[in-house]
Image 1 (spheres, rainbow over the protein chains, first blue to last red):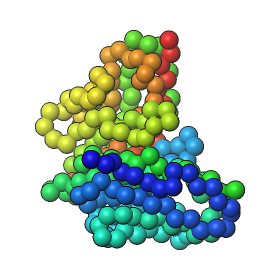
Image 2: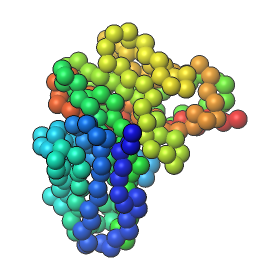
Image 3: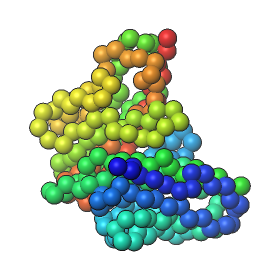
Length: 117
Length: 114
């Protein structure tokens, strides 16, 4: 079966432009996560979805960042008016959820490398 | 609130030597614990996980970790490392009742020298 896919793999944009990053999770995975990994840094949690709802948006760094998920599947992360500090690798992951709560193994996509000039 | 601390940002070690990568967490509720590995120019993948049961967990490539509830630790160990183990290792925690949010540590870069 297919793993998590992300597109585009690389995105170069100019400061001030909007960008959309796409994630296709593994079929049947109800939980979907977005993380940001800056050069030499760990994983910064951005947002997660349970189905189509996003109960925790606390990780979004500013109101320029938003995300949605439709049909319990594909998710889009949008960054408006990009800034140079937004340059990073954006990772998506999906997982099953355990009946008693909590997540199981997260399967990561290859990431989208965003460069803001 | 949950948090994860990886005490060492970088660990250099010679080939065939043992290694321990340290991870401590804080949580007011029971947790699931994970170690993920990111090889150079590759994506993140699961190394091992603790969900319940035996506190000693074995993963891929000869790695193991022990859940110590009293010390809130989940240290990763390997008795003899190879050059190919050079990678970034991330500890992560998810709670039973904390929704589905998973918190990752800052990562430990393991560098195996010949």
